[in-house]
Image (cartoon, rainbow, N blue to C red; front, side, top):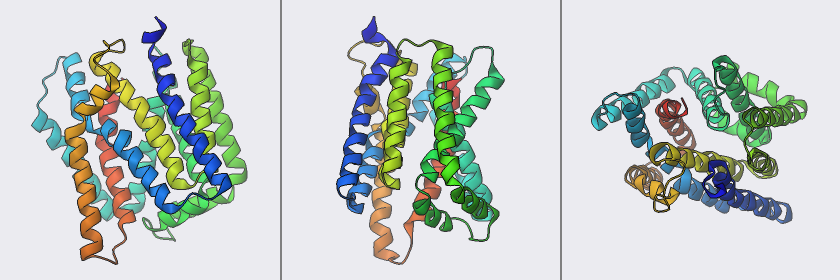
Length: 313
């Protein structure tokens, strides 16, 4: 019975992420991790789980439509997906500060919806706890790397914008906001575990806390990669596997099989990134790719979050 327990299976997968985090922290303490490896680690994480967990959106939406007794047409789905991205890209062009704020909000909700289970008959409580969790996860990661985050924000919004001024206030009060974020995250995770009475919730909670603790001691890129790819992307892939083929699937229907089904759209996204990486330095050597990459991440997050909301519902 234990072998088919979905939470126990998750803990076995996340053990590798925790081990990776501990090794990276030890490296960082002995000698600062080179920037080349930081970028390599982030890219590998995106290739393994970051991109694939979003490349399965069409399969998730197809299963959601099936369960709701509604028709599903791939081209209609892709058209709506791209339209969402196009409209959001237009919003970035016209209202960059608002678009960044909106991206932070939907990221908070998306992270919270992934990690905080639904409370039966408690819709309002579920919404509040999920959003609070996402806010404090994002606060923990950003405030722990405030010196690295500030320059990134200046690539996206004006220095005199209200959003950047609010960031300056938050970063100046990180000495108490950061431990507060950690404390609230701990309380939310413990409350969720006790409420649902999961048999292995304590180990999974400790693993997540260990990952978040590791991010504090790492530079921004590997810290983000560790949480986003090693936790969020990995757990989401597992959830998608359970949603599409069942949590207690047969041995031949493994997580790797689901990952392979993401390959077509994963390869398409990877090809686009490689093409951009080749063309930009060649034809626009002075062009800063960071804002473009950040905006692209936000563009794919919006429709992805809508699809995953159907799964989590």
